Image (cartoon, rainbow, N blue to C red; front, side, top):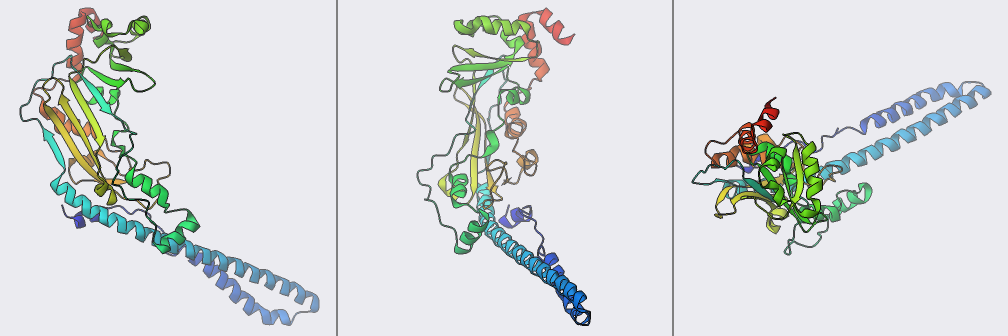
Length: 372
């Protein structure tokens, strides 16, 4: 898709009134004309009334001065906003052109050539660090703003070159912010989700799975002795469908789900982010599904406020756009699950089918309780 087509779908970044200064200016002119028109009549009044009239005219002139000052400040603010928007739009146009080139040549949605049946009891190891900052040694140093933008920045605090540089070359795209165990178990037919937290404060590999998975024979042996009693007590009080997270002694997941922001310095120089999500069979090393996508920042010159650094972005044209409402996060897991991962397996089992197979391993009583 051409960059012109992408630009046509670009939302307005900052809709502003072009005449915000006109109201105070018109009020100032009206008061000034009123004072001028009333002055001859004031001169014909008696001395006492003349003093009162002159005082009123003085107040009117003061109001004229105030409205004039407000109108001038509003004009300056509007001019600064217009120049800031023009500066932002120039960055966005460059990003759109670069995005169009990458979407046509490097965007990938890969599915394994040989589909396979996913065993019902298998799990996935989640290898995603959503807050991992980019390490781009070839990133350029902090740039200086154009002279006019330096004046705008001094008056309004944006664009801030330091924070712009941070967003551009250091902060990752927000696609992995909500990729967790619960989201994966809801979107994909895995029985459990592992996370390797040995280098964090948790200091262990953890498993999140429904109680039925933990009740299968041999699962309790995965628990470290130090926490086994506490976890078994939680499992005894949990509902059959309740997800329980607990540390385990070793990893048993067959599949690996890896997510990374893999932007290059050249990508970020054009305000474009590149990210990758891959599903791999850990036993065979076979790549089952992979998505490499891109996003162009739509408001690089503006401070994001409470929004995430790359939340205001536009994806490549394609089915992924349906999974990113305007101004919201990209639902990456649901998109890849629907368009890549499900295609990698024959006869994907529904969540109820997976739980039914699990319950059969535990016994009919658990399944009866689940259905009852």
